[in-house]
Structure formats: structure tokens, C-alpha cells
Amino acid sequence: FDGRHHVLQNGLTDAELVEYVFGGGNTLLALSFVVNIVLAGLTILGIVYLGRSLTDPRSKAIATALMLISVVSISSYTGLTSGLTLGIIEMPANHPAAGSTTAGEDGVLVMWGRYLTWTFSTPFILIALGMIAGSNWTKILTTCAFTIAMCVTGLAAALTTSSLALRWWWFVLSSTFFLVIVYVILVDWTREAERTGTADLFTTLKILTVVGWFGYPILWALGVEGFAILDVAITSWGYSILDIITKYIVTFVAMFYVANEPASITGGADYGSTLSGSS
Ligand code: RET
Image (cartoon, helix red, strand yellow):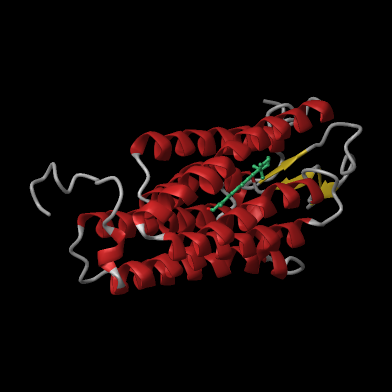
């Protein structure tokens, strides 16, 4: 590698990247990482507390899926904070951020670890939502597969340096996968939640999720990866705030409900409760 053609290779070490983020002028960016480590940790503890006396197998499975969202998140933000999943990449010549420099290097700061770790966190959000709606595994795993495809192609969009057109083509692909997920949530799961008796909870979670998730591609397009209208720190705060809504707020709304009304969560498809012989 000569440090220019490989996207994850640049002239700075991880320690130098951390020094750039935490060493002075970038407090705002540094805070956007640290706040989420704290919130993910508190959310994990909150789930342990609220879920301490759950007995219904589906409620336990939902609580576990919800916990894994924050388990991934605390790891994701630790990756960003340690510099491991940050990089400096040079945009294609006709990109609005072409020619920028970061910490004395040619290129812009890319938080590629975010796109990578969404691959692991978003499926757990969809598993929890799908189970609350009382959907079946075929639909739940379909949305999981599409969210993984969405995140991986989003990562490709962020890391493609050869052509501006190809960056946006990845974006279009990723957005198409996203729309499949939105369709399942708004059409299938909404109908299933009505049948299952979880429509009140599902409506709240659906609004937080669909509105929140639309924020990510909008931010990508406005941020340094896209039209470069917003700077890196603002973009990072944007993602951190969206994460607070789509992960921790969604988790607490669902956990309070599951902990207080376990009877209404047991309708719809069963998840092993009859196979294991318990009821
Ligand atoms: C990208 C850019 C390409 C187009 C689209 C995107 C969508 C990202 C989404 C992310 C959701 C993340 C969540 C994380 C919580 O852990 C990759 C930004 C459509 C919807 C909910």
C-alpha cells in the first residue's frame, strides 16, 4: 500500500487520529462519540433492571434483542473513540469535498465504523419490532437481510473513491433496500400488530423508527460523504442524535411496555414457547 489507494490506509496512525479528534479543536466531535457510550451503557443497565422479572419467552426474547442493540452500539462508539474505525480518505476529483485536508493529510475524516456496525445493530431493532408486531421469522429475517445489504452498500458508498457517480449509485442501491424494510414495517407489521393486539405500542415504535431511519440517508447526503453541506462534527452529532432516537428511546418505550403488560405481548406467531412445552 502506498497509503493512497487503499481506503483504510492513510498517513496517520490510530493514535494520531485520536489526538486529532480529542486533542483540542474537535471537542464537539469527541463528545458525539462519548455521549453514546454512556447512553448505551445506561440502556443496557435499564433493560437488566426493567426485565428482571420477565417470564414469558417472547418478552424475554424481545428484551434480549433490545439489549443487543446497545451491546453493538457501545462497541461501535468505542471503535470510533479509539480511532480504530475512523479513516481519512480522498474524495473523487468532482466531489464537493475533493481537495480537503484533515490533520495535515489529504482527505476528509470518514467515520466508516458507523456504517459497518449498523450492519450488526439494525437487525436487532428489526427483530424486536417484528416480534412485537407478532410477525413470523420469514418476514423478520427478510428485513434483517435487507438491512445488512443496506448497511454494507452504504459502507461501500462512503468508501468508494474512484468515481462520484459510483458513490451515488451505491447510495441508490442502499436506499432501494431501505425501502423494502420501510414497506414491511408500514404495511405487513402494522396489519399484524393490529391482529396481535400490540397496535398502540407498535404505532409509537413505527413512527420513531421510520421517521428516525429516514434521517440517516438525508444526513449522509447533506454531510461530507454526499454534498458536503454539513461539516464532520455536525454530521456526527446528527447520527448520534438519530441513534439516541432509533436505539435508546425505542428500547425504553418497548421495555416499559413489555415489563408492564406482558400479557398483551404474547399474541401472534409463537417463538418456541409451544415447542419447548411451556405456555
Ligand atoms: C445510508 C447511506 C446510503 C443510503 C441509506 C442509508 C441508510 C441508513 C440507515 C441507517 C440506520 C441506522 C440505525 C442505526 C442504529 O443502530 C447507509 C446512510 C438508505 C437507515 C437505525
